[in-house]
Image 1 (tube, rainbow, N blue to C red):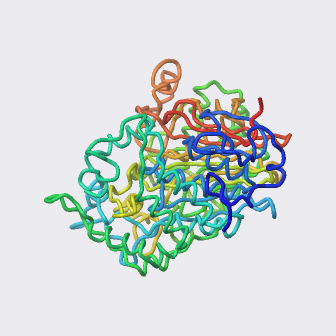
Image 2 (image 1 turned 180 degrees about the vertical axis):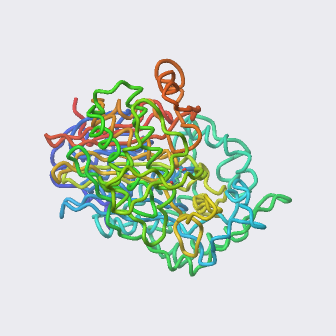
Image 3 (image 1 turned 90 degrees about the vertical axis):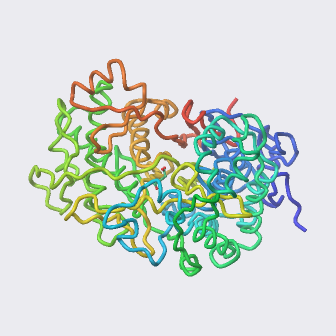
Length: 608
Ligand code: GLU
C-alpha cells in the first residue's frame, strides 16, 4: 500500500529537493500545521517568494494547491486540486456540477493551450426552448429549474488537464477536497451571506435545504461546515474515474434529479431534458487560445464559447489604438480620462461581442482581435465625450481603411454574477489560469441527492430570444451547444516566458475586471495588488455603466458624468486573483484585499 501524507497525497510525490531541503515552510511531511498541512500559511492578499504560487479566493483552497506544489506537483496538479477544494468551500460558485475554462502554459513545450469544459445543452434543445407562446420565458423561473442545467464539464476538464499536463492521477488530486468536505471548513462571512441570500430558493428544494441549511438555518460564521455527501461524490469520482459521472451512477443521479427535481409540495419547477446519451457525448475540448499582443507582451485568453479572450484582446487593442490616435499614453491620463477611455473600449468590445461571438461556426475571431479592426473602431472615440449607448456593433470584415460608423445598436443581454478564478505558477514555468462556475451563486438551486453538490444553471447564459429582431444572434440555445461565457482566464508571456496570470469571477464583468487589472498593472503603474484593489468600472454597452461605490462620488464621478457617462451602483465587482513571475525565479501572488472578504495569495517558500 502506498503511504499517504496528511493531505492524502502519496509520499512519492514529494520532490527530492523539497523533502531534503528542510527549509521552513517547504515540503516536509511533518504534521506541523492546521489540518496537517506541511506549509501552514496565513490568509493574505499578497505574498512573495519561491517554489511556486497559488492565488484563489479561499485560504483552504490555496493551501491545498500550495501543498501539492510543495510536494513536487506541477501547476496542473495544483490547479485541479485547488479547484476541487473550491468546490467544497465555494460550493455556490463552483463544483462538480458546473463548468469552466483553463488556459495553460506547458513548460515542456513553452506552448499555451486551453481546455473548454463548458456545459452543453441537451440534444433536444432548439432556438425556441426558452420561449413560451413566442415570448421569452421568465428568467428566474428558468434559473430555478431543471431546464437550466447543462451537462457538467468540470470533472471532464479536471481529468483532461491532469492527463495532458499533470503528474497526479485524478484519484490523488481529489483527495484533499474529499478530506475537506468530510472534515469540514470554517464558515466565513461570505459563505454565510451567500447562504442567507439563497435561503428562500434553497428551501424550495428539500435536498438542498438538508445539505446547505442544516436545522433550517444558514450555518453560523465560525462554525464548521461538513458535507459528507460531497465527500462521497469526490470519492466516487476519484476511485471510479469520471466515467462514474459521464456513464455511471453519478450521471444517472444528475439526469434523474434535473429531469424531475424534488421540490416542496405545491412548488414544482420545470423539468430538464438531459439524457445519459448527452452525458456520454460530453467532451472537454482542447482548443487553441486567443492570442494577441499588448505593450510587447503576448496575451493568451479563452476562445469560443467564451467571449472572454476575444473581448479582452479587443479592449486592449482599443486602448492601444486610442493612444495612437491621441498621442497621449494611458499612463499619463488623469483617472477620469483613463476610466473614460476604458469605458469606451469596453462598451465597444461588448457591442461586437454581443453581435458576433457564440458557439457557432464562423465567428470572425482573427478580425475581432486584429489591430486593424480596433483602429477602425477607435476612430469613433472622442477624448471629450462618451459615445451614446448602446454603441453600434462594427464590421470585422478585413477592410479597415475608412472610419466606418457602427452597423446597428443592440440592447445588452442579461448576465449573472458568480464564479471563481484561480491562478497557479510552478517553479518549472508551468502556468494555470482557470475560471470555473456553476453560473448564478447557488446555480440552479438543485442538489444531487446523496452527492451534496449543486447543479449549474449555465444554460441561462444563452439568449432566450434574439437580441434584435432580424439580426443574427450567435447565442441562442441549440442541441449540444455551449452557452456563451464571459470567463477570461488570461496568461501573459514576456518573450515566451511566464509573466502574469490573471482572471476573475463576475459574469460579464469578468471581462472588464480582468482587462482593468492588466491595464492598472501595465499602464497605470500600480503594483499588482493595487491594480486588483483599484475601484472598478464595468461598461458593457448598457444604458448605464456599473461602477463600484468608490467611483460614484467625488471627482471621478463628476468627471465621468461631465463626459456623458451614466453611472449606476454595481456594488462590489469581481474577485480577481493573479500571479506575477519575477525575474529572479520568485513569484508575486496577489488577490483581493477587501472584495468577497479578501482573497488568498500564497507561495511555497515565502520571503521573510
Ligand atoms: N455564467 C457566467 C459566464 O460563463 C459565469 C457566471 C458568473 O460569473 O455569473 O460568463
